[in-house]
Image (cartoon, rainbow, N blue to C red; front, side, top):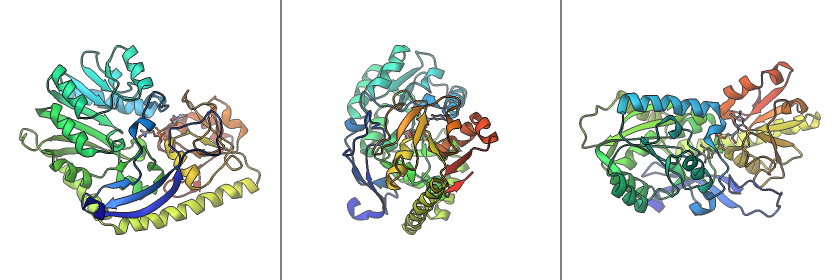
Amino acid sequence: TIQLMNKFFLNLGKQPLANNYQKKFLKKQVKYNLKLYFNSKTKLVSISKRIPSEKMFNNKYPYKSSMSVTMKNSFKILSKEIKNKFNPNLLLEIGSNDGTLISNFKRNQVIGIEPCKNLAQITKKMKYQTYASYWNFNLAKKIKKKHKQLDLLYSANTLTHISDLSDVFKSINHVLSKNGVLIIEDPSLLECIKKNSYDQFYNEHIYLFSAISVEILLKKFDLQIFDIKNLKTHGGSLRYYIKRISNENIKISKSVKKQIHKEKKFGLDKFSIYKKFTINIKKSKSKLIKILKRLIKQKKRIIGYGATAKAVTIMNYCNIDSNIIRNFTDTTPDKINNYMPGRNIKILKYKKDILKKYDYVFLGAWNFKDEIFKKEREFIKNGGKFITHVPKPKII
Ligand code: DWN
């Protein structure tokens, strides 16, 4: 029946795996259909094609959370909040990446779970207890056996990457203590729709959560949201504070109703909003291409800033190649000197004056616009311009 409830709304074309940066440009790269659906029962927005996790999250996952000051700060502030408000004996982070969050805790206070072995290796070297495994029921059983039940579980930008959400929450339920708290944060569907940031969709992002859909999902697992925070990170994220329904010691904040009301008022629970989104995205595509082509006609040199997974969606959906965007630049070691997945655009190592050779900069990491603008004051002062597609394609 869930199948029947799935309504198609947007085709983002054939897309390569987002974090599969290539040493050499291969014309024939494996690509998968990227189609978006809305489920009228669960209210979840998801992509149809599910790629096995092992193909995406393995021993060479390039993305590191520590590459932006914004994320480092966000995790630092949250760590303080966790210590002050919840003071857990032991914190478990699902999807600890390179340890940007857990490094704010003492080694005996925290456990990381990270299936990408190259990343798990980093926190292991830092002597943090790390399980280099996928989050699933087998692992939950192992963890419960060793550490008993846990008072605090945290997961940022991870659960939306796991296809089997029932298994995710069953496993969380297994290790979460009676009065335990689960905190999750992910990009907000409302912000994505409002900002026309269709680049939040790529093969790794199987779901985009809303408070509406998370609430429905949690009910089945005796869980409920007791607080919600709107964050600026990743283009607008929601942080959900979750407890057991049976735990009446924690009061439910007004923020929960407020967010759900806001989402319903915008129409996130109705299919029509997604059809409008589709129209906006098609317009966004043609407008972006128009701007870029006009600049090329004027012999302007364009570089992309931040070789993000998001930019992979844009480059492939809009068919942008190196004749339009000459290069990307990025600080991530495992992206440098590789090609953007599916494209012949080479990623150059970020250096202080790299932008000097270009007239326009396309913001691949538009979500870090403030951080980037601060860093590139010189370029801006010298007349350099930025291009973004969020919320609408324009030159800044
Ligand atoms: O969910 C996910 C999010 C959290 O991270 C993953 N599936 C994959 C990844 O998505 P993304 O690649 O779209 O994430 P970011 O965080 O927007 O990527 C920023 C990129 O820009 C990184 O490669 C680092 C780079 N960067 C840079 O070169 N200079 C970033 C900043 C701020 C800079 O100054």
